[in-house]
Structure formats: structure tokens, C-alpha cells
Image 1 (spheres, rainbow, N blue to C red):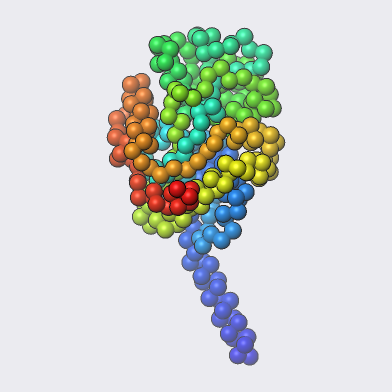
Image 2 (tube, rainbow, N blue to C red):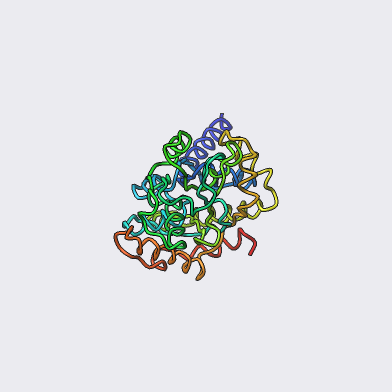
Amino acid sequence: MIRLIVAAALALAAIDAASAQTTLRVGDQKGNSQAVMEAAGVLKDVPYRIEWKEFAAAAPLLEALGAGAIDTGLVGDAPFTFAAAANVPVKAIAAVRQSGEGLAVLVPENSAIKSFDDLRGKKIATGRGSIGHQLILAALESHGWKATDVQIVFLAPSDAKVAYTQGSVDAWSTWEPYVSQEEVLFKSRRVVTADGITPGLGFQVATPDAIKAKRAELEDFVRRLATARAWSQNNVAGYAATWGKLMNIPPAVAVNWLTRAKIRIAPIDDSVVADEQKTIDLYDRWGLIRQKVNAADIVDRSFGAAVEKGAGL
């Protein structure tokens, strides 16, 4: 009888402990963070609960963050800038560095368009405030063109895909894994990439409330994410297989993407702040943000030690 009472008490204690466990609500795009962390095996002993929420792009992820529906998420520098300038309560806690080759303006395989010069007067689909939008603006500047020299059609990724496939637009300025998906599965061509044109930054962002209330969980999460990204550098096939299964997309798409991307998590340092300021300045020059912000004011450097530990720096 005593054993039964003790067993029941232990069971209740376990239930109470489980119910008291903190939940970190994490926004992800196309299984990006979840897949690499699962593939690297860094989620097996997490001492808190992770509730993954999937988004098709950064804009809805940032909307969810601003509404308090998630605590943290992965976004590009351009939408992050857009959100911060609109007073969304968000801070960058870690940076994502990668090559610029996976951010590109695509055209169909049989298109007569061969370079950015051929896009004058053409329709280019992208998301408003997205890194695809950023690439178009940066490319226009680098060519000395005006905003009216191309026709930007603002569409969510799913709608942009339809318009692009049906020929309603001439090109699509988008990011990974959409770029590799189009290249591998449909033989689309990149006529311009972000390489050498934009900073190519991404950010793990969080709300100020989460930074205050869930700091330990966020530090642990970015450490594990940095570890997973470091692992992925030499384990592309394993990551691609996990991502393909999670997204129900052929792993060859991920192999194409990840082989050239060389994604790594980096601490927020002076170089990151300087590159983010370049994005802010670009959007300010084009009149796309309500107010110009200082990059140093929208980042949180205090997670640097956790990132460095995870990345083995």
C-alpha cells in the first residue's frame, strides 16, 4: 500500500514538473531551424518544451512575434528592418551568415531574359519588405536605375510561385529554399544574386518580453542552433535528408541550397551592426520605412557567449 502511495506521489510530482516546464515558442520558415537541429541531434535533451510554428515567410512570422504569439524566430535582415522601423517589439539576438547566392532573381528556363539588364520594364514578383524586395532595390541602385525602370509585383511566396509559373510575371526575386526548388525541380535560372550586392544577413530574433522572462531558454536555444549549424557544414547530406522528409520536398533541393549557402550562426558584433545599418540605410533611401533607426538600438549583444560556445569559437 505504501509503495502504491509513493508511486502515486512520484507520478503526480512528475506531472507537476512537466506542467511547470517552460515552453519556448519558436517561429520557423520552411523547416529551416527545426530540420538542422533535428538532424544534428541537438534537440534530444532540451530541458524545456519547444513549440514549433511554421511560416511561409518572415513577414507573417514577425506579425506573430509582434502579437505575442511566438517568442523567437528566424528572419532576414530586410523584413527585420521593416518591422523594427514600424515599432514592432523585436530584437536580434544572433546573426545568420551565409553566401548571397541563394537570394536571387529567377527567370524560367526558356525565358529570353539573360541578365538584370534585360529586366528593364519587366514584372518582378517578390514580397513587400522581404529580402527579395531588398535585392531588387540594391540591384537597381547598382545599375543606376530608378524604381520605375521595373515593375515590382508584391506577392506572398505561394502567390508569387503561381504568378511566376503561369507567366503573369517575368521574374521572381526570392530566397532559399524557393530558389533551389525552382532550379532543381523546374530548371529556372538565376539572372542576379545577392552576392556582393547585399549583406546577406539573417537574424534569430526575439521579443523583449521573452528576452526578460525566458533568457535561459533563449541562450540554450541559440547555443544549440549554433552547434547544429556548425555540424551541418560537414554533414550536408544528413541535414538535407531530414529537411526533405520534414518538408516533403526532394532532398536534392536542400543539397543544392546547403552546399553553396555555408550557413553559420554568428554573435552580434560590430560587423553585424554595420551590415544591418547598410540595410536600414537602403530602405531609408527608398522611402520604405516610417522612421530611420540605428542598428545598434535593435540588437542585443548579450547572447554572444552562448552563440560562440555553440559554434565552437
